[in-house]
Image: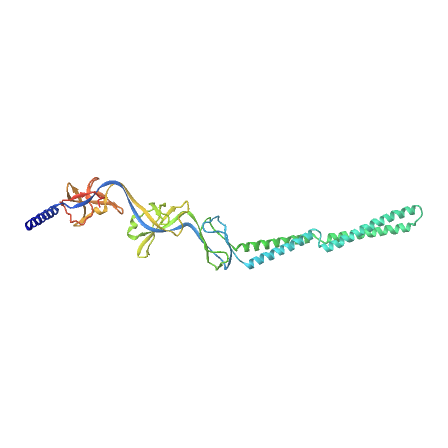
Length: 406
């Protein structure tokens, strides 16, 4: 039994030794990538902040209580539209006083147009009416007296007395009619008309002054920020609303100083916003930075980009992600960046030839985050070793695996 156990142990040790020897001589497994032809885009990814190209900050120009707010966030308004109304007791009182004065002088002008003050005119017209009745009665009496004189039933003296009395009353009637006309002269009418015009001008001035209560938008656009409610007290300069045109937006793009050489005017830009996943806004570089400024721990230049926002879905003030297409190479030979190596200051790759890797110096061109262009040293279809912890060198034997292994 002991001899059997010793024999089994010997077999196991021998098998293990053979396995170790076999594994020691087995080539290591290494992932390889295939060089391929493709369009390579050099994209500069950074961040930025959105603001309208055309906008205004509407502010109070006087102190007072806000009586009314005529708009809300998201309102589309025309230039000159009333956004809010301020309280102004003095201006309101001045308008009411001017309107009362206008009513008064218009009444006086109407009285002048109708012949003067109603009391004086009524008295004269009453006297004229009575005289006309008296004259009519006297003429009837004179006619009867003249018939009696013809029949010698009355004296001529009585008829003459009646005629003299009628003439006197007619003179009095003419005097009253002249007095009635004299109640209002052309000068009186002109003066009354002048007072009306003056009062109307005062009302118009008071209305214009009162119009200053209205806070109006100087431009057409959307109200994209307003937080005040009626009843709030405002001081001169207090912000009432932000209004702007949002169909075209300006993005301040923060590009790190070393990357500014990759940016030029006219380059295509794509903007995304984390709050709207899957949505993109397109534009192009409009202006390069004029200075370098500190942004936290970064030194950046502010590149101005304009993007279209036809549905107003990107709000001013949003912090956005920006991708600038700085350059594109068509049908470039590319490999993953991780395949590049440095040996003795030379950039190269480990190229697969049969089951061996050989050192191949290469010249690189355009790169993006994942891939780099090879302008010399490789052709499409060549397989190059990806990064590994194994100590590979020129002439090493390997077992190639596809790029997607593991």
